[in-house]
Image (cartoon, rainbow, N blue to C red; front, top):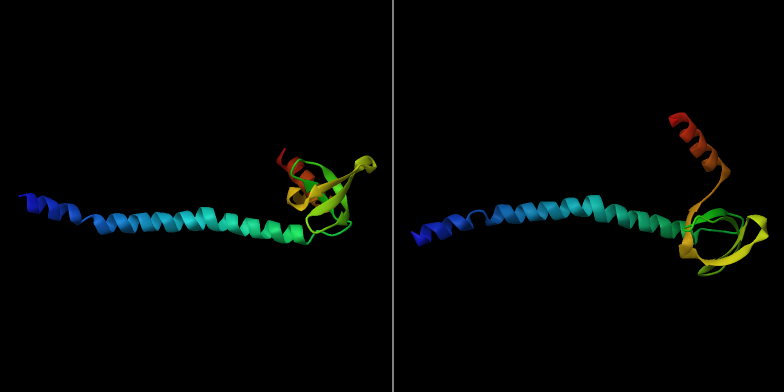
Length: 110
């Protein structure tokens, strides 16, 4: 009788293993891969920043790039305030076209 119980318990081993494998694959494609793509795009954007670009920092400061070094950027905010920040602190590019389209979208949804 003990032998029959042990044999019955072993039958579900492969299906459980396959289920865990499927969950791992789904997790990779829906969680890890998109994050890696986003990091790659962000790194590409930060390396392509040049003088004159209008950017927004992760702290929400809007400014114009005045100088670009290997790891830092000289940013000029409104009023002429200049600050040196790390490239990793740049969140996104800010252009008037993007701002106008975002404003139009907000007004359309209201």
